Image (cartoon, rainbow, N blue to C red; front, side, top):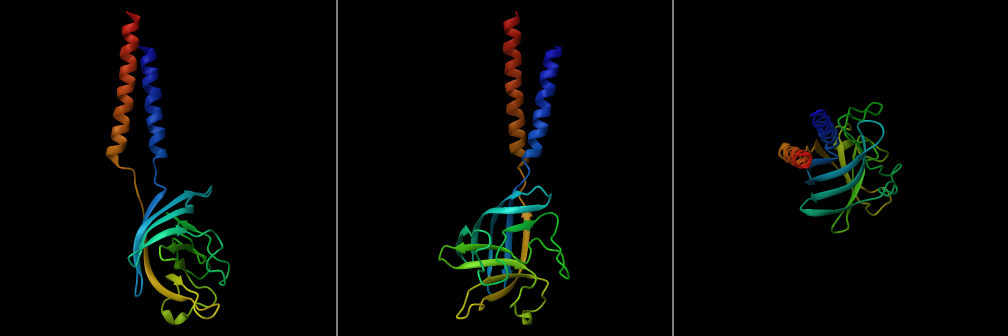
Length: 194
């Protein structure tokens, strides 16, 4: 009986630890502006610092066109400040000097659409951003370049990011399956002892 209790304790500890591993590194997003709107999913890996994530993939649509790929770090925009860093902050928020809290920084996240057009989603103000677009403490969706090296278009957008959570039904199914395996093991062991 003591061995059975020990085994059951180990099983409960395993289930408890596996439930904490089931936390989401997948996030849903929506964005909407005067010229652009879209939604999708961001897959990310948390860095050692809690709340800072490296984006590893992005899927969804922008203006009805599929988002085809995440661009590598520091590749777009190539002529603006330092390029994208593909980081986001959740649930902690990034705060830059003189800028309100946000889920993105001023380097932003860059991606390509299925038609080949490249975009950068970022927060705040960088050199060359027209301040006539309204509040500078906002998210911007940037694409271009235009005829000149700094001729990008900037669309102020609202941006919402939410973490996907593991379904309780999936965790229940995992737990009952593990309990069934334990009971089967316990029964076979009891039969062998007779």
